[in-house]
Image (cartoon, rainbow, N blue to C red; front, side):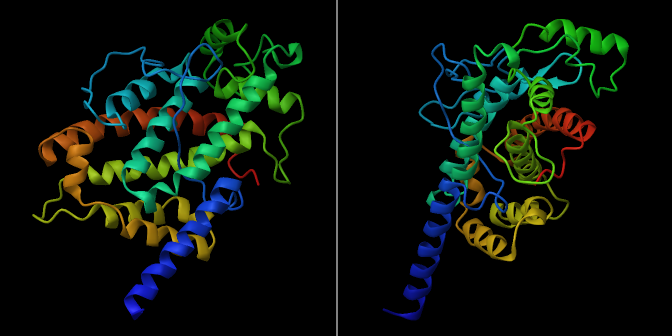
Length: 305
């Protein structure tokens, strides 16, 4: 076997090894990345293809594709609720589409999605376990606790979610887990809040990557998706990862498809159309991210171990 063949084989073995750790959650401290899909019938947090699409479908679907940017956009639009909250069901549905997005980029990049798939599963399982538990129901002042949105806004939030379940929204989950002593600020636990923080960090990475992919620079040369994704990663998730995981992530980014693949993935013909679609998605992600950031920050949860 030649030197190049040995190097390629070593990279594949390394990524497969990391993938197995992501599946088991063994790199939980280090890789806080992305996602997979699920189907809703009438079970809590099982979403159908139409679930969460409360707003208009402003982006057209792509026939024959597993990843649907139109569904991702509609789930993101459905997630913001009340004055400063995020509904968990469309939030997790958004991650399901982002999993499909990652998996569409090839097996190397798709390995990254396993850790986020495990994260969304944790929150869904916690939600199912809390069903029928009277102690997990929201108190009357759920959205007024640690909220700076004003008396009128919190009153609307309170009335809208007074009878919702514990994992109905980001703020309801935070309130319930804090009051039940499920959040540990010093040690690692599988609380919904800690799990949400990991998803939250990964969402910023993807938002930044999509924004960079949508940029039209003054110079004629468009940078490669691989370069843009690596740059977005270095300014976000890399800050929470070890040297070993950062090197493995960059190996995965090398295998990312060229820009033309993204045209086909979201059913556009050129960079201008790609800019329009991705900017809409990034803007919707930004609204969800900012609301989640505010809720976590108000409860001192941005550094949960």
